[in-house]
Length: 164
Image 1 (spheres, rainbow, N blue to C red):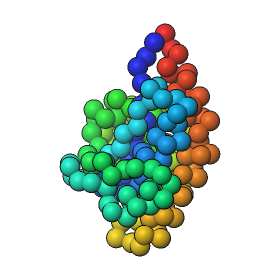
Image 2 (tube, rainbow, N blue to C red; image 1 turned 90 degrees about the horizontal axis):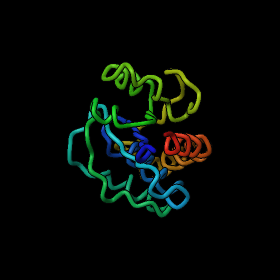
Image 3 (spheres, rainbow, N blue to C red; image 1 turned 135 degrees about the vertical axis):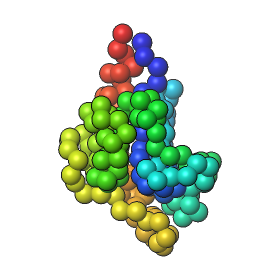
């Protein structure tokens, strides 16, 4: 039996979109698959040690999701190796994942396309520097796509955890 199923969200700075996605997925799956999964996030141009932006924290809080303890980290090969599923916000993030670990292509998807394969598709726009309303809209967009993907993510968690 394998350990926890790991989902990695990737954005640019790891202070807005990917922390919101990380918190949202924890909230969506927390009680149902407690102890069976881990959610982490990283950024393709992230510095280490920064919190989520205040507006990201506020947008998540509206939905009772607490990301106030988030600390940014750069995307690394080691994080990609650890991940069972990599969900990226843009095609550029997808390309950066492949640049770091070509063999990660089979487990990497654009969030808005998942579970469909392919590197082209509609991105989740970066709200950095914009209004709280834009952050709220981004959180809702991320939550909507995670809601649509929920059953597939649960299936993958269960399938991987039950492998011998």
